[in-house]
Length: 255
Image (cartoon, rainbow, N blue to C red; front, side, top):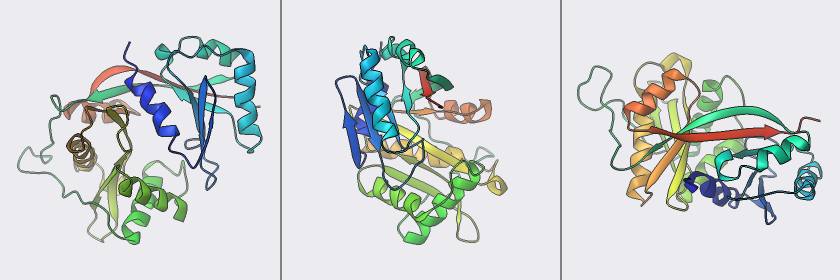
């Protein structure tokens, strides 16, 4: 059993502005947002929670007015899912994750197979970060609203050892982008890969994914992992050297 992805999830949540931790769970909260994709918990590898452990976790969310929610790799703590179900949690989604290593990484070419693809940049100005946040909101069909806080989180990520990369559209705004958290326990998660609808099918997703992955390996990460949302994106990631490795489970308590 490979616990790197789950160990990273624990380490990454410990970077949140507010952390609530027990012997079983780590919950990370960011007071600047109520987004369930940022405020959630995960079990430590090998966790075997009791009903009291789950109740304590639920209370940590409820006292902040947030929906109790977890993301985790179930094979690293097999008794967590049954314990959560017993407390009324249900499964939101099950995602397969893919892993890339320096040995498997294959940097992309242009769509026609020639020379390098789209020019990838590192954001440097407030306008860059604001444009990236807005582009990702559009790319994900408004699942989250763009905001000054979102742009600030992207800047912090870049400045604190992670990586944000984007391709600039002809009008100077962001056409597509990707980001990666700072490495921990030898690995890191690549997330937020998105291209605005008007700029799709131009190799942008592959370009920013490859650039961010390469940046993490240059910083010493031994692997980079990500989750994908459809067969099209999976083909892009596999062409870059990402390979299936396991699943992650999203569970929440709705009432």
